[in-house]
Image (cartoon, rainbow, N blue to C red):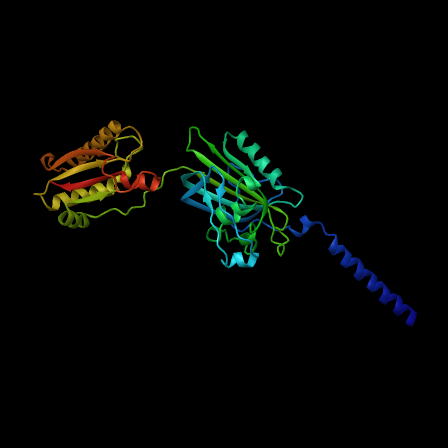
Length: 359
């Protein structure tokens, strides 16, 4: 009996030893088997690198991306990762060349298998982008991108304020002090909106997270340069009367036109109704209908376009709403009276407007 017990105890010890050894030899990719972040998905045009998992995801209908077209300058002081996470050291990252683009923006953070290198991942993206019609704008690797390998990612492209928080802490620290960085920026033009893509890949270096440690982590940014939707609330007749009485004019964004066209879009009816109510409430007031454009296109073209759009509004108010033609005068100022810089789509959208100016 005692002999059987000793053998059983030894057997249990042996099984325990085998179990412990089996944990030591579990393939690393098995430890990293987890699902894509909830609500995430690949960009419809750009595939993921084979075997990758999504750690973070964000889609915004309209946002700005600064596309890096040259290396960033600035050194990082040596510090512990925890000090960096708590903001206990200073750094400066100054890009040498960039381009700002606006539109529908998708950001995706992937992690791939440990046996893949950042170079292999970025080369696959480069090949795929070329296949679907993109042209490379800028490409760099390691210290070519920033003086400290990895700093381009965790300090410039993926700083604390811009991190994706879908699978914390993995998505937060995936690129912290990463190494072997690779970067690619590309652009595609064609019949549709221009598209810009940036791909940043580096090897994870945060040892406490097995899912990303020594794995290539990819930050993919995609921007489709679609115009911003107009979200301006229709100004009512009372507000028009008050603003014109106090300032002599009011800017309106509810009278809409297609790009480079003078036909008033059907969704402008609500704004035109309110303009007519304002004019009918005070039969003595006369107004200039002033068309404004952004600076895209030639100056003379925009001057003509703004006048023809103003004339279209006058025609609509006189023929469909019965406003006396003598009370209205069309004026076109083109791009010469901007309300914002024309450097961004948001600024250009603010400059494209119709104003009522008291005569």
